[in-house]
Image 1 (spheres, helix red, strand yellow):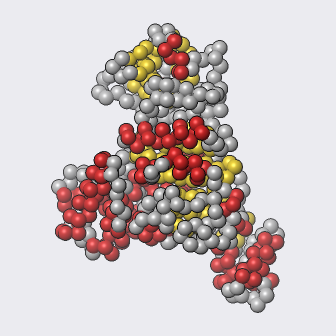
Image 2 (tube, rainbow, N blue to C red):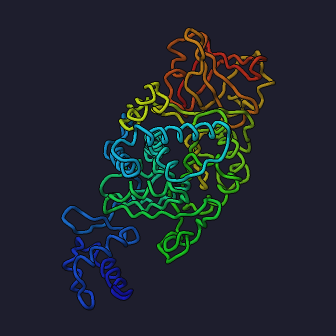
Length: 484
């Protein structure tokens, strides 16, 4: 098919899209040479995002919904069977039907052990085929769950459009990609681009092959540091090629569990932020372990301090012209998912100890934007609220302040006082709310979700010399409410 035919199909579709459903059999009559309806349909599918049309079950195309994306979501109980079967198909292709036992099983288990050990030691991992399969077995299920929770929250906050252009940097074996695909309603449009240079891209490609007709996807096999997000995508693997409309910027850029592998994560994020749409969002995810979670906050602060990005959440900067400098090992936690069959199969021959089972759903994340929007659009009043930056001035005093709940209960032993990390974006040292006396007046401290904004009235501030942090004592005299 020549370019002139494609152009004519596009122009006629653009003209007729608001008149009636686009029927490929009808549309061919308006094109010189009358190409076969199957050719017309393929062009419409390829150009759907730029034309703003979606394909219906009867094969016709209609205008795609505009406005914010609305998704149905009630949590993640298990990794979907269809994806697990696709991963096991790859494992069978690699190691035969008994990939989980014998020499092949031992080889895969040893590689997963090596991946985990190198991660703990902060060493680089070489991503060959076996490593990619190890990641798919051990990490893909929980990465999928994590991404689905965070993306559903972004949609609930009205941050994602129904016609969604996404750049997934360091896409790996596909956690965010699969979560996105499952969250989208049938009439949404997704233009998905993955940046992944390793063998993990082969797994991702296999998992994306059966994507629906309203999803356009492409994998760019390039390093994050070398890929040019601001240039037109498509064509070659480095990001060059024909214009596909990405000059408007991405609605969502994802860095999923990749910041710790970049030589200069902050500089890389700076560069990608410039490719966001005016109302776009950059989402950075990291495992919940201490080192990577704290590194995420450091990178977040470096990018936000230098601009043009600002923090949307969860670590909202409530006080103007203030920047935090606390340690902030902050992460969210959701219910565990069911044990995937492929993990159980790999674990049983090794004694069934759970060494190769990974069902925890806990993660650190940062949401950055360039339009100044914040999850909590509240500015405290110094006449009412005390900033955490001034905590040394009111130790042993009772004060009022606003703070974001940035942890679940951190109490190490059962029977000890519940403990929660707090932040207002000005803190120079960590602040922990200690619930010493529960009451109906302060129950929101326990009930509030991670990232919720809380108002504290008459809280006692003390210095904890052992932890080198401030304790915000919440007792019978303290009132805690969710702030709106």
